[in-house]
Amino acid sequence: MYRLDKLEKKLLGSQVEEELMKYILNSPVKIGEKIPNEFELAEKFGVGRSTIREAVKGLVSKGVLEVRRGSGTYVVSTISVEDDPLGLSKLEDKFKLAMELLEVRLMLEPEIAQLAAKYATKEDKRHLKTLCDEVEELLTQGEDYIRKDVEFHTCIARCGKNRVVEMLIPMIDTAVLTFASLTRRALSKETLETHRAVTDAILSGDEMGAKCAMMMHLTYNRQELIRLRDQNKE
Image (cartoon, rainbow, N blue to C red):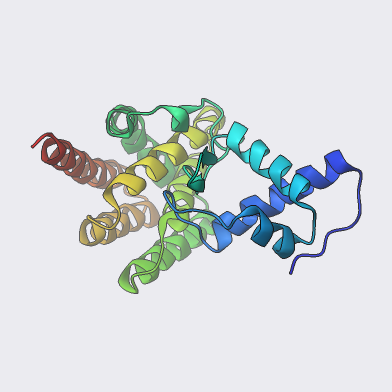
């Protein structure tokens, strides 16, 4: 059971909100799943139900949780407003959002990968290879790989040493998470192959190869989104 220091009510509520977010991410409680009820959470965190309600209310306001009357409280996003400053995760039509985000990614990420191949340091390359290996291992074992996938794309963006690109990382992260929440593991094989191709190109300093590999990765994503959209129309 979590044991938290006794703080003023407002501070305690913020602390429990932070711990509740960690619980959602680490359990993990997946998008669409229900979190435990107030009684269970109060016991888990060692606080009163009013504090739990305050923490839940905070995560509702940040777009992470949704209270459904008579049913319970559900996870609707695993990123908060701090991670999604543009509020993209709150847009209701997820297929439309995913496609629009992908359009922007196609404009940006191939060029970002090209920059990464040009400017990545030895340490950057070691980190990128480790992330690529970790995503591959999680995918192969059937485990949840999405957070590592986000880290992978974030790493590529940072490898380019462009401060403006780094400011776009939350948008890229939102795009990866939105796509993953819709497609689940539909592109496991393609993800493995294209992640490895992007990584190998960056490691070898092949700028055009990195650009083309990222374009292929995103093209597979686009084709899958179109397939799912058309399937839902039937």
